[in-house]
Image (cartoon, rainbow, N blue to C red; front, side):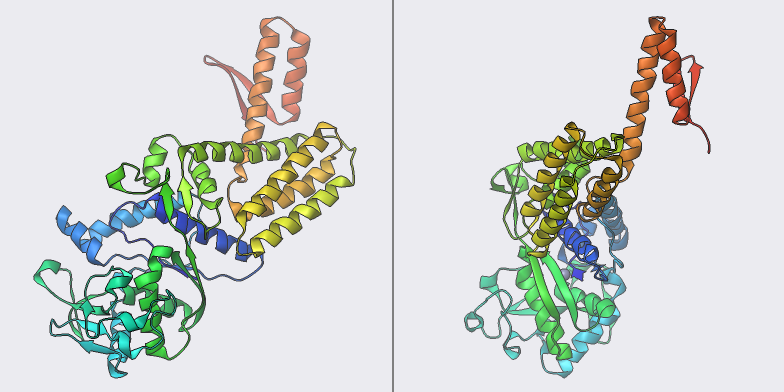
Length: 444
Ligand SMILES: [Zn+2]
């Protein structure tokens, strides 16, 4: 699986993270289904934007992009995105790009323009436009575009290799095809095939990458190898914020860091961004963020409660509900990652088990089965986490310590002693300090 990674010229925004989270959900689901996933995500550290950014700051390109690469890794960790197997940098793969361009020249798909740059001849590749349903007949013959990004209406021969110009400053490579730098699109063709082979299964990205980026990747790769490049293309739809296109101009542009600075938990943001089907347009709202917070809390509370069950009375309903959840969650995720139905089956289950627990009809033995399934499902969702059980224990202990203090203050020695014994049984040691009572776990 190859997923187009960030262009590291700025902090990634929540629209970028919608794509990375959809890809994470897909990968986690495939792993749940016992597929062996090799995931490659490139880092675009050389393109029109990174060059412009480094020049603006007056620092070398590598120094400029390394800063944002570091920030990107911090962000995906906060969002609990599972790391890719390899994060190749474009600047480390210039040789592979040059090789593909040379092959394209030899096979007659590429030509050198009078500006010294090398272009892909769209007319030579009849399948061009298949992915994005572009009518190739409308292309202007011989017209060329040197920018990395352009609209469908401007579709024309695109740059594989950009000859050095003074605007590039000291960003250039001296190669067999001249002094210059790669175009953005060839980068992904070179890095995907290097790590996954000439043909591979899944290629993902945001819908705005479909044209021209992915269309051009297909053209370059298939023209060079003569083989089918990718079996499945998956694109996520756009993200809007409060019903509008996200834009600095509208004051509704958010990076992950902007939201964290407002005090939002990254896992709440994760939940919100995965909870809408990837092929639906997503409307990010602060109200949505609040209800996501409640949803995450409901699931975590449920897991905490499972750990508190001590009884042995049980009902067969539990096994029926567990089987139903497993089938319904799995069936929905298998249906093109229908996360909406998958999540509602999960919350139905939580509600039904909660009411059985209210009636003391769930045994400790059964909570272990339920907990196991919830944790397997959380391997896909990535929102509950293992740490919660420990946390639940800590808050339980805090409450007991507090209760014992109150008993002591009211000279209820019997209760205070009984709580102390209870804590001791849990392996908790109490100590009197100047700051009050502290507790720690007895070392095993
Ligand atoms: Zn790409």
